[in-house]
Image (tube, rainbow, N blue to C red):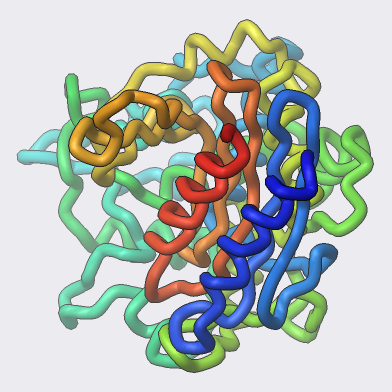
Length: 348
């Protein structure tokens, strides 16, 4: 990219760091073959960070890879791959037990109706997210996560037309399906199917609470140290990476390096989930409303983001890829606003 454009992009990051909401940021962009990567504040270009729910793209890629090998179909019921003891009582809606009818596609698309073990508030009026952001770090198992979801009322029957409800429990289950099919850990699958193939140097599943390599998270103005929790997210949010690695990954995801490229169109079955985000099958789409994009010049983006302020998106129309983080749990919207500014500068 030109010196002028590099300077304009860097200015966006430099202005972002105010040491109140954002203490450090890192982003990488590839636009029409040209790559830019930079950082500001207390982050370096090669600084590893928690990508949180952007991890779900890794899980989606592995599931689609297994489909390409004939080891599963998205229409398969999850009961085919998961022991009944885990799914019993998982989804009873209006007196009917739907636990045995949930499919892999329902999990990927957040159309299962299973409550979110992490963000939905329990009987005490608090969510696990609330506990963590208060500084009460804790670990949990898959069984504990599912038991917590089972203690809540499902949102709708699986596959209800036009309905989607974001639930981390969906991807916890997908991780178990991956492990049961391959007879390997989720971490090993990430390593063999993605990390080694793409030669990602700083990307791995966080599994050791003593691992100090990733930049610590922030919640508002304070450092948020929750290593036990970060070891528990696994397939729904446990990957550590860098912006450069994630740029390589997001391009590989959409270009057919990890699974057949023609699968992508089949993932574009959109449902409203968080304004202005729509959920597809294992991916999300951002389309700015007319009031924020009156000329229609800002492109649709597909990819995923995480509560940590991390994201990775692609614009097929503009041949653009972007990945990065603002590393702020309390204000993840800042990452979207930053992405919009960077994309606009890159396309000028």
